Image 1 (tube, rainbow, N blue to C red):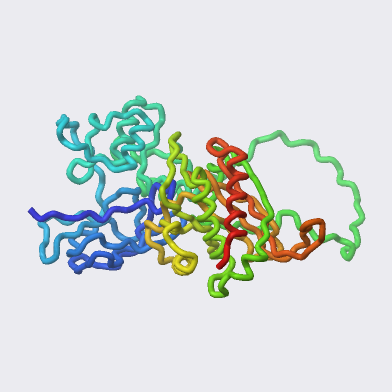
Image 2 (cartoon, helix red, strand yellow; image 1 turned 180 degrees about the vertical axis):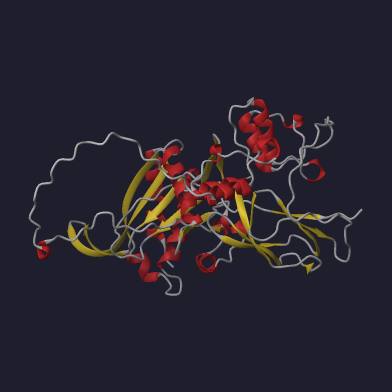
Length: 449
């Protein structure tokens, strides 16, 4: 038997549920090598090239280009080099088929996608009672939704694939208003497209009794030259990008779920800048000092997920990087293992590839703390940032510039910056937040290049 390796759609960021296959970089029958780009994937906030995890031959492509599928879906199969499996080719439009329930052995590992497991947990569905319609009996999200629908006894649960739900959501269409043509009343993409293509019904004017017509008064027309221009109603509709929609969802969730607590301090960078190597730059110094502060106050190097707090032995520092259509936060994994120059080199490479759209999936996830720097805009003295969930803190840094400062009773011109820490008050107390700013300043004043 030929063993195949599955190419699976990964999670490209916290909260991602589905992604779009932009295009395949390899064809069926092509040889692939481990680490070689295989397919281009568009997530909520970025587009990445998914690399092969093994050497071999691209045996099957299960998801064609321009298709939206759920996280955890199998996109393709790779067979060992020089060998070809005898699997039957997939049909162009595979339709999930409900299989009869089978009794599962307690010794047999349960095969279910991550999304299906999460959905089953949310709705209290026993996966052992669900028949899987995926390959090899794997339980899919659709299988769990069908089980939920059966439990609710016709209470109106809408059944639709993730791609169909996304299409309806983007077009502002209520799926509950449609009659599904698929199995068990499932709403298909064709159902949504037919509804979008249907002409809007003509409004029916109400029948009212004719009122007696009064003679119109004679009005003298005003001077046309004195007419004021009318601006009411002048506006342009702008479609939100998928990245902007994802940012809106996540930040709204963060502000709703995490009670934010803010502390701000003004720190003196004058002496540090005198010894900072010119090739390093102030932005990389800020990254370095943030890592040092997190090592001194490790309670902020943490995430809070589903009621569980996690601390991290290494600093996985996420950096806010502005793009033309939104913001992404690539992650410097193990930032505490690098010197200042090493950290600067890694950061420059990560930012460049983020702006070029060449990040790897693992470089978009796993952050334990975020830094947001608006110092490039000299007019921004200070600001507060919204926490990037599931992290418990984010540091916002304003412009580093000369300001009047009182030192030992005298007025001096010093180079300072305002640092504002936003912390999740469920996890982090005010004094601990203040200790972080204090630790940052301690490392700043001790910096000797």
